Length: 346
Image (cartoon, rainbow, N blue to C red; front, side, top):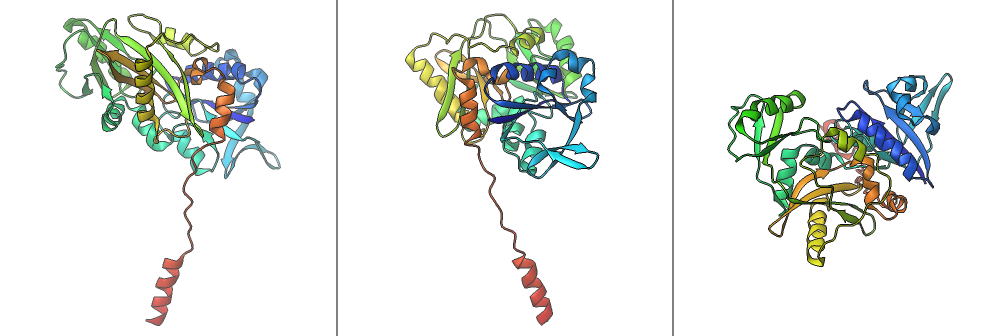
């Protein structure tokens, strides 16, 4: 299959996206890959596969690559005498954070009629914003951790008990996130979070909580990964998650009862279907008192959570062959014609 991977973007998670794209080159060994880099200025560059190395981007060598633009049904390479279409069967959106997870790229690809694997606009809007994610979960009957929302200009009055975890509403990869163990640490943690976003989510920090990650998609049937119990640390900071995004070997499945495994999978399905059709997502769950609570949705997980699937490449091909199609609207100008005819009679 010909897969075009779009990565980079104008995002705090720009570098993580590069790491994820390099990992995809290792993982999708039997596919014909092309790579499109979106730089910080949102220019599009066609990157040769042998240049998919981190230094190529940090040194700005990518600027010597061919520039691309979009037309209906294709990315095109600009040439002196016309353009050349980039042949692809599906586009994989691998831009983390802004541009990729907020719906911009998805909207662009849909507008230009390119088949793509990614959350669509509505799914992006609800999963990119952690507050809206809470609303989504609650609307489909999925429980969430107790939370408080604060905007930058709100009084800094926290109603939850310490310790707390503070997260920017529109960021991933633990950027701007702090664990606050007592009131004296609150102001600094809020200052840090508000450097990255105008809104924050505050939650209780639950020490020792059982956490599980479930990834998946829906093709003609459910494509559910193994369930992972991530490494136990108080908090996975940016550096740890940066390394985590380069994983390309399958991890071990968590040891779970049949009942708990079923609960996690059914909760994932409630979140996914139908909003996230056409995408591969990962949900992070907490299990408290036997109940499954949604912690976060990762709409474009690091390295597409390939390490949770037994045969990731085969799965991605099945998803690509079963993408949702936009409803075709027939425009025949009957209304305008009828008005013109009526005017003519008058």
